[in-house]
Amino acid sequence: MAYSIVGIGSSWGGLVAMSKLLGDLPGDFSLPIVIVQHRRNDSDQLLAEILQDATALTVSEVEDKEPLTAGTVHIAPANYHVLIDDGFLSLSLEEPVRFSRPSIDVMFSSAADTYGSGAIGVVLTGANEDGARGLSDIVRRGGRALVQDPRSAEIAIMPNAAVKAVPSAEVLPLERLGRRLMELSREGTKVGARQAV
Image 1: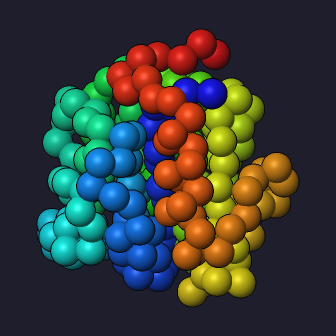
Image 2: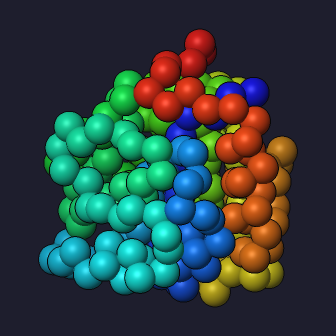
């Protein structure tokens, strides 16, 4: 199986979890990563700066029509949904989903629609159920689901909802998620190549 993209969703406690996960990935990680982190609508770009300090990967806040780039962490900006298209990212001001914009569900579902079995979805700590439905979409299209072990999450609601929605998900403690993503990335990459769905 060749994977094309990694989507990561988190909410409450996500900064610590993402810093650990991204810090465990080498600078030559071969897949683009798209992150949706719930935050206030008026948040600035400080999140990208903090995560850049934690990882050897390039971190940037998404701009509309930004190309998906291997080894880059694309961060959803505050108050915008991020849609994953064939080789690039789009921003949307459509209504919040589950009270969230950006929405993890929206990002995951668009990854499933575009890359099918080439998508990997990762759900981390969080205080609501955003991400569960989108992760289910990824798996239904043949993609891979990883979930932070709720016992290692600061808030277990989000990973618990993901496991309930996707019983086949790999449930791993936070410290093993980076290693698992490395293993999956070595199975081959097709960055920017649309997968059959």
